[in-house]
Image (cartoon, rainbow, N blue to C red):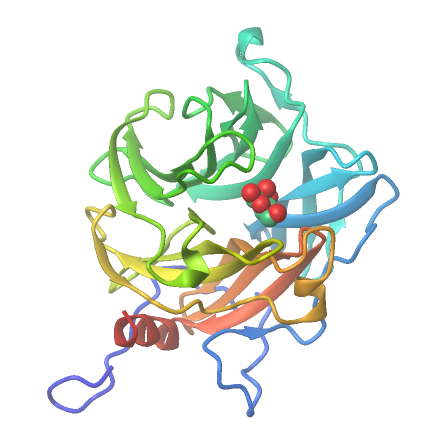
Length: 335
Ligand code: BMA
């Protein structure tokens, strides 16, 4: 962005330096805002004996490397959450067995179906949110300090809801979450992004609409928050998925918006174009073709680099890169 005295105003990424995160410079011939890792997918089909596919997962820095909670679809196609570790954010070792969550109340029920996890660090605590099954899809929650013992919390909302994404800091003294209430199954009567707050992660309220589907065709069927919001000097950067319909299926793309820092239900800018649509073979062909589904992001506060982890075609895990300045400028110029 050019300011009045003709200098480039840089967007600050409010994040620690992360010099060891995956990164590749933008190829010289690339005209896009977001570019793909050259050896995508980073997790291929059948990465371990009991897994059919690993996708829609979330990674964060941990020690000298990285750790993540992964959506693993088993050989029987049942999704569950597994822990994974990596020295470089690219080569992942994923545990064969699902995470064993300590349940605080048997009435919550055993976790049988769990998918699309997000991991949020708030101070020295790590919170996991995911799509849980409790008489239908809702938002499961848990915490850990060490990634060895995991404590389940109450479900955040009543069914039906998906894509619960916790902000990485309290806002006005409260935990803050974006989610996407929705009809049963694949019903698409509605599917818009809401904000909610909670004093204790149990009682969620003060629900506010953030934004609704459309108007662009690429996001006319439903939308949902993606990775945890990214704090910048210009507001919260929200990457999200937008879904359209074609004559035979859905197409999932990645969009972006900038939300107010103190009142994140207020949208400052919303990009009218998707930043990434399915185009590589690993995105267009798989168990569910034409899906890019961003769920994790690594950010380097020193350089403004982003590594976006996304599920491709409900089959693979892939990475794309972006630069915070370019994304923010693009959103503002195309909102
Ligand atoms: C959504 C979720 C995601 C999935 C997507 C595309 O409703 O089930 O896990 O990636 O559909 O199939």
